[in-house]
View (cartoon, rainbow, N blue to C red):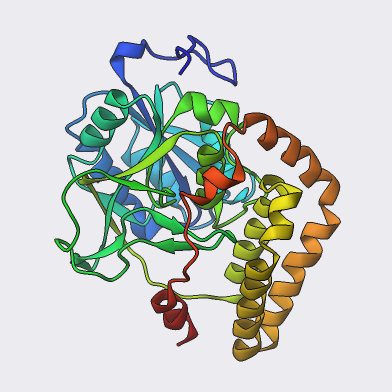
Length: 341
């Protein structure tokens, strides 16, 4: 891996490499109910060197003014409109000065030892580009939300260990296919190479798309259970969430796979499309419309996606065959059936 530069992709000065400074980026959109708990827990970290960047996406609930009064030590970026989660993170990156970047959902509380073990692990393992913590449910702290994600070869992402009891899994670093977008730590030079997150992922799927690219670049991703985050989460689907997930998935597949791979894997791609459309039919007209809108949006933006594809292919270091070894063929039926309820 090349040495970190003294200035970043956006021309901002970086800390000395030995300092291991972390830029924690929290995106806020009307997040008043979560703000106090989230920011206070970050400020209580045992890791000594970090900054907190709060990106406000045009909130109207008074949370931006509250953050300015309550937490004057924050770096605050106030967007005039809602740029979405990926857009918010990218805005925060422009003023980040850390060696590592740590996006964090606002509806979380982090353990005081959240940063220290993930910084230590990634620092000691140069082949690892990103790490994700053990994420437990906020209201049931004995139950797992995610230990990273498993990725299906057709781009579906499944939370590892969802709703399993904490303690069932080994308390040691685990290689995973994807970070959880709720919380992760990534080398800033990797984000510089990818020009940040994909702004097309307005909400959801940013974690899968980033991890997919990181895998294509030949790097590894790990879950570090010693790092703990508590997340206010429930698995549910809405038409708008389905649209964002499907647009992100189709967008990513267009940009990543070689043409021969698509031909060889056509049966499994077709099966996934049938499963998703079947789900939409069961849920009703709004879900069918969301699925069709996602497909139409990809077709309308095909020129832009071709440019994105060229960028990703330039970053590629491994073949689709080697990528498949990091993915899975089986569907996580438990999670699929849960969202059918």
